[in-house]
Length: 285
Image (cartoon, rainbow, N blue to C red):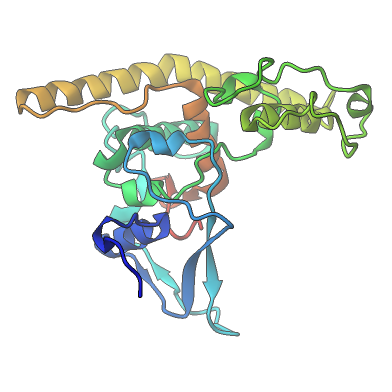
């Protein structure tokens, strides 16, 4: 017999996601199943800051419950009001629409980041809390220090350890000392990215990635920060007029925006001429 207060048991992020899907008219065919895959049970935190946690929780994946499902079957039906785009987000009046290209990625990253910062007040909270909480390991951020959130870092060097000659020579599979690769996740991410970036040295890919990274920094300074501060300023004013306290749980930051950008780069879909690039719940699992 189990004892305890069932009502106080925390809810998994998968349960929160599926409840949100049901509330927003997303139909999932019973022949497939959405599952959490991982060794540790990640809980849906009640605070907005949980979005930017560097802890790695279990991934959410889709599995077939049948040996063969005909390819003509529609396994998930997602109404367009459930997708997150620059047209549907709360910043829709502040973001210039871009139909395609890098401008579309940047604009959608801003739309997503704005919803992340809203926390539970976001219409997409149930979906967003299920997304990876660490920056996705895309090549554009390999070895780029200012896009990594070092708030949880306990290493004095903060990743500023010189790579060994074996790594520089291309022996990236070699085992290195603990001093070179500490246990701190942010420093590990930074140093691992530096090693990976070596493969791209003196190539056209490196030039292109450097150019994109500069575009992201410039967009953050010139568009993201002013837009978010203005939008949340209006929200605070509106909440004050209605005697409701509203606080931004996490201040905007370049690493936070880059986290949103990495989610867009690895998950977004081109939907239609109106929404353009968008985040599509369940389809991106």
